[in-house]
Image (tube, rainbow, N blue to C red; front, side):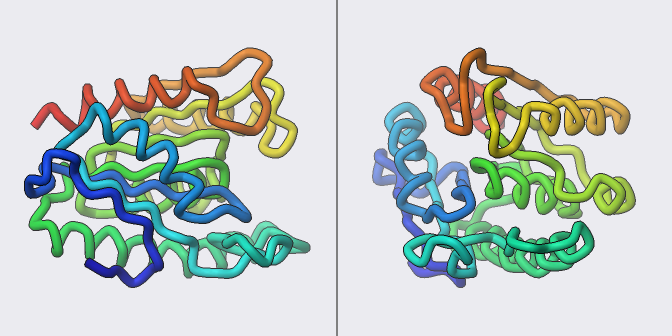
Length: 219
């Protein structure tokens, strides 16, 4: 099965039709194969789940071997927002393809990712009118709070995780996102990892797995 974005696909270990799907978005300069390592771990415990790990639509400006969801180099805040909106359309298209091709409904879909992949997942998931099940975010932030505030369309379950020593996307962005979602009456879980830099620690992978078990497998 092929999608509009080049994608690393991990089919259900059960060999059955997927009961649900998780779409994972890599960080700036990475690719679908990078984030599929997390999917490979989760897949062992979620044998009926389809994992879809796309490459972002653009070649990375600072790493010719990787990809970016949108350009971050020498961009103003408004330019970043405009570019993220273009990519949001492409991620939405991929979500729609996964729904259609696997005969799934939106409450059977979770999306998420690391760093820039977390950022585009939050923006896309909150703005979709057909509510997806969950968003799992690692080491990210809200791209533009004002824009998101004016475009809230649904309330998926959310968990955000972050290292307290992150120097790439500082921890204050998690605190700002938590405050945003609390003010807008979202059910949100957060976890701060001590002495952790810009990465997904083992504990983070385990917490993400439990979150999926508790939410995606309720139905």
